[in-house]
Amino acid sequence: MFNKAVEIKNLNYAYPDGTKALSGINLDILKGESIGLIGHNGAGKTSLLLHLNGILKGAGEIKVAGLTITKENLSTIRSKVGIVFQDPDSQLFMPTVFDDVAFGPINMGLKKEDIINSTHRALTNVDMLGHKEKIAHHLSFGEKKRASIATILSMNPEIIVLDEPTSNLDHRHRKNIITLIKNLNMTKIIASHDMGLIQAVCEKIIIMDKGEIALEGLTDDLFNNKELLSKYEIDYTARGI
Image (cartoon, rainbow, N blue to C red; front, side, top):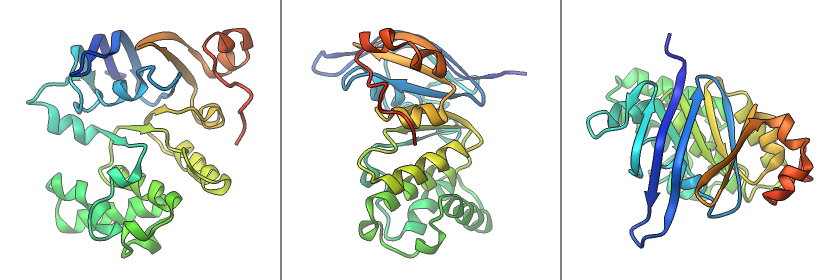
């Protein structure tokens, strides 16, 4: 049985202005793993995430659920891996919350009944069913975060990728999002500066530095190595939900 969710071999990427974002990335993520990506702003975390469903295309090879990311496979891959962006306003653009969450299932060609069921299930999972007829613009920031996660859950992906899911949230909404993510039964890849989130959700950590993978290891092992985290200026004191 194939057990790799993601395989990356020698991935390199530079932005159009020549800025090198990723250099020699080699990475395997197993099905069901929860992986935390940490490192400074500009370390390459978001650039790496955006390669996982073909938004960015660098040199190298990436496989998702055994499929190489190519133009021909892109629609299938995007049904298997969903990205939740840092800014929920980048994800919510339809007239109502229901329409936003139903957008993915509609584009997957599901039947009307399946679209409704998938949308209601996703909204229920993020405790937003009661907001389904609201305009996303009128939601609180925490509600927008939850709705943006629902837009991915409605497509029932194998892998969910989250970029700074707890940024700019108050304590209550942050705690709710962490609990929600922790309870998701799928492969999870999370980029964050929130060490409490990483500790609560992720079994493994990848430290990125200057576009490279500097270190991989078990979360508890790395958090207990203060000398190592100091080397990469990771704030290991900001822990706990």
